[in-house]
Length: 84
Image (cartoon, rainbow, N blue to C red):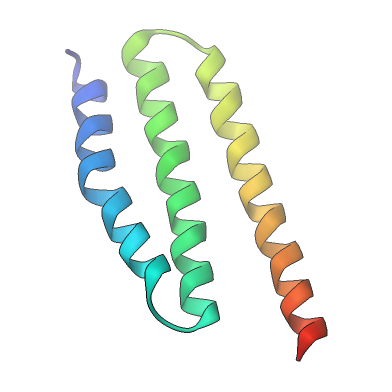
């Protein structure tokens, strides 16, 4: 295992449960922060896996995930603004 794969496993084991815990409790905005953070963590894990495995195709998936996560956050905020 390369250092990138070890870092991906460690980030998945530590980072994602913290993001899920943040998403599970709190106000709507704090849950949104947890969801946005989870998207960033997953994108970083995909980049580390692509580096460790030597496949550049996973980099495209990480880029698309980060762009869609940001766009989804903006759409959700717009939806919440219309409700209040």
